Image (tube, rainbow, N blue to C red):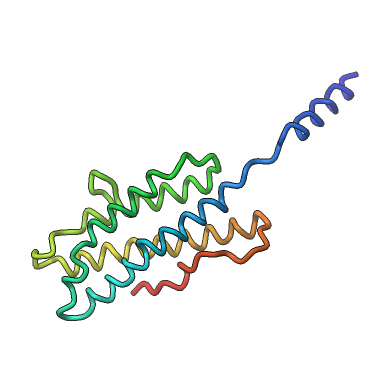
Length: 159
């Protein structure tokens, strides 16, 4: 009798939607959108900051990083602990309203240390993006997704 009750309990568990909803796919798609909106701009600013006389083209780096952080923070709650951890780590690396993370390094464009500070902040963010990419791609494969992984952050050059 106990075996029969256990078998019914196990069958009921699997029959009642034991499968979790896909949170990785929609989150990666959001990262693809953020890549086109912010990350490409940050990579472009990296080039401006390393070219003499072009650093003022990166003057709004602080605002770009703030907007990227805010969009990551506004993403709906994530139940998948691995995806949630990646999102939280990326947010912490960029920095929040308390100016922690990379944003704390940023100063106004007219301050003499603007270029090295902005370069350092960008490097922090780009390094984290590569780590997030590699972890997300591994999760993508582990979940058995057959379509190619859509992010290309592992190709970002971090000097």
